[in-house]
Image (cartoon, rainbow, N blue to C red; front, side, top):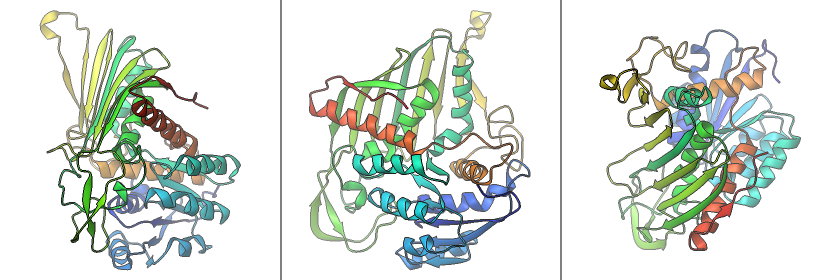
Length: 398
């Protein structure tokens, strides 16, 4: 661990939309939750697209832009690094960073293949540095508050979890064939956004032990080849040539939790009109709660009221009564909002709390082992789909 008196030097590998979110998070970590962290040095942003990297470094106050991840690994002054690039690159970068003694926060999904994911989990087991995975929605105040309701038994015995992540970034058939559309089944909508809703489900309702009834489909089987670099989900110039989409646009499945709870899930990147539609409902015999990322500064809660005339779902506005809010926003008053950018700041703070050995840390980040488990669930979903929806057991959580 880094001692509290030594400055922490951080870098981000990847200057796209998620990379910039990590960059902004590190910039803000010492503005939230009071004292405790040492000064943070914003050392570098690395990207093969040097113009993109230079723009991100300028915007977020980093000292320099670097043309490669290798330059970050070779810099002995950098302590902690976020990996925010294509999934297939995660393993070699993580291995090089750990070998160089650097702490690693890797974006989800953990890797581009199960082989790489298992190797990264084994790397974590023997590493002498902090390794973590960016399941950013764990930091949403509303989701964390719902988790507390469940843990305190305030919903009673759970009876149903219904989760979905519906996005529209792939609805345009003229959208370029980027790396997101490459890889086998499970690496498409499931790996990209399904990993988030699967993690949120286990975070709120406990471990998933089996899946069944899975169905994976591709609505747009071919896409035009890009003429240059594609950043995030953005449009880009394309050629007249088309290539095959190798993974799924949409997935549905049912899950059984360790408690006996049943969950239903649907994931789509071709859901028209829904830019970032992570949402779920969790129902119990004594109450229910619901969250929708399109309304991130609130959640719905319902429980048994003394009188029938006052029963019904109540809108709970984000405020200091929720996790992360007190000390986590400049204006600590209900109704001032919450954003995805805040979640990245809380995640970065939690990661650096671990790195610095902070005496009063935020809840720790998900581990490589946690993210491997999500990929094992995704693999089980793919197997169920290939076998006509058969029930497939998930390896037990370690």
